[in-house]
Length: 275
Image (cartoon, rainbow, N blue to C red):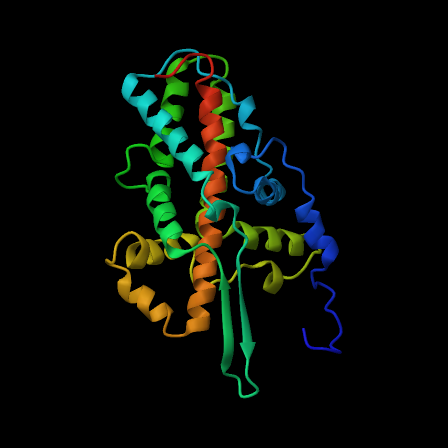
């Protein structure tokens, strides 16, 4: 907002930001004890609570009977990957992009704060094991399907409760595939002010799903089918830096979701010992 310009009635202020920052998670942020910065986990789960109000994973009703060995192995692997991912610097990162412009409108200085590329490459590979909907044997999609089927097979009086909780978690993931957690929180803050659609609507050129595809398959995992999209994004250095920051935000929000779902799995298997 330019100096001297009156503040718009819908302009977000420190109160709105503090409302999200102080949103108290309904449960301890999953695997925060393993994090490089546990406070960053609290902040992310404050946003997650503000946006989705997800139920405490510890309240997920345990399955009454053990899973098959292959299914148990897949769930154990998912949890293992989440525990490792929690230790990575990116998931605790805040980062940012700052630009100093010349009087003529050119870029005088571009500063990008974020994890080094080698850390991103390692994170992207591990993240893919949780995130891929295609061929990963211990992905979110796989283990969510295992849990859903196991619950229905159990036929106990907790089937409906489990189904409702799984539906709530799955719905949150669907939103995070479309919009970053930060954008969702900002949109909800505007909605709380009864702002019109031009404020509440999230208008980004790329969804998190598309960003993850561009950066993972154009640079970090494979120099493959999205490399031309990745190259074209950086024809404008500022635009490319902002796009990569949005990619980081997408990874962080989805990663915290996957960590939360790992706690759902732990609760589901708590009545018996997994291999």
